[in-house]
Every structure is written in structure tokens, then in C-alpha cells.
Image 1 (cartoon, rainbow, N blue to C red):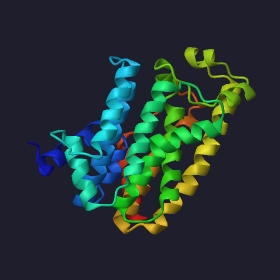
Image 2: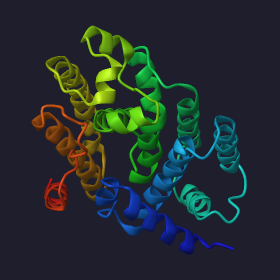
Image 3: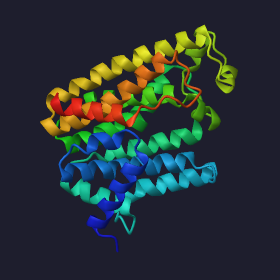
Image 4: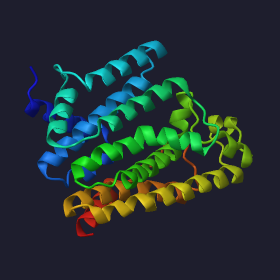
Length: 275
């Protein structure tokens, strides 16, 4: 049977291996908080992996996600992720509703591949990313779910900009349909990776909105202890750096060159610590 110690070791390893930016921030947390946040990340990762698994049918994905939902109210069994998450929930008041909202977001990805307008997209972002912020805020130790949700939405909006091509290959377009039409951008341009003035104007609009949510979300820092604030400031700073790189590239997000260097990441970690 998997012990809590073994489970935490596994979710921390998963976070280091698969969280390209998230892991840099949580390294700044004391061990109990770091482990709890890693458990939340591993749960969110499992939801994403199921929703994106090309080897599963839509029906199989839904069954797996509903089984995951049921596991939140029962015994964790021998799953390292569930064992770690159950232990973290005993230590911190992590919102079960937020965790279930993440599952709702995964289910939405099996049902919906286009978004008519930003109201629809915002609701989706609230489930898949805002809910992560709400779940984590209990570990950080602040009663600020709205600010945490805003930060999660900001990071998801930046993800959407960065991952346009990858999402297209999964059959999904998250940029709202009314905004594509308003700026005169056809989905075929996403398929071909065509960077036109219309595409740049559309993406500049997306960037402006992401920055507004990021600004609102960063107001959370004033309510956190020093190390939690350093953690949040770090991964928010990493995403801001990604956004700046996208802008500097003229919104050409099709060549896979939107990542940031290890040196830049370490500089942002340092900035978070001295904030």
C-alpha cells in the first residue's frame, strides 16, 4: 500500500518533470505546503491527461473523469496522486468544489471545441485554471478565492495564446469565435501558421486581456506570507515572461519558440524572493 511519504515523493517528481514553470515557484515553499501544492498539480495533470488522451474514446474519457470525481469522496486506494491529495486535504482546507470544477473542465474539453464568445471561454478558464488557484489558496493560507481565480484565469489565457497550434492539432480553438470574426482571422490561418497584421491585432487584444487578469490576480500577493508570495510571484513572473516573448516575436506562436531559458527562470525566482 502506498504511504503518504511515498505518494508525496511521486507527485513532487511528477511536478518537476512535467510542470514547465509551476515547479520553479513551489520550490520556494516550506515542505508541507510544497507537497500539498504538488498533490493539487498532480490531480490537475491527471484530469488534463485523461481529457487529452488520443487513445481513449469520448465515452471512456467521461467514465474515467467521473471515476476520478467519485474518488474525491471515497478512499484513495493505492493511487499515489490520490493518497497525496487525501493527506493534503486533511492538513489544509482544500476546496472539494474546486477540485470537482477541474473535472468539469476536463469533461468540457470532451464536449466543446469552440467558444462563441469570451463569456463562454471565461467560464471554461475558471474551471480548468481558476479552480486550481482556488484549491491552492487554502494551502497558501489566505481567504482570497476571487483573486486566486483571477490569477488562474490569467495564466490560462497566456497558455491559450502559447498553445494555439497544439490545441488546433487536438481539434480545439479556444480563441472566441466572435473575436476571430471581428478581426478577420479564419481558422485556416491557424492551421497554416500564417502571421498577418489581422492575426497580430487579434493576439494583441488577447494579450491585453491576459495582462488585465494578471494584474488583478497579482493583488493576491498582498494577502500571502513571504514564502507563499514568493512562490506565486515566481510562477506569475514566468508566465509574464512568456507573454512578453510572444509579443516580442510579433505574436508568431507557431514555431514552438515561446519558451524561456533556465537563466531567465532563475532570475525570476530571485526576483520573487527579494520582492
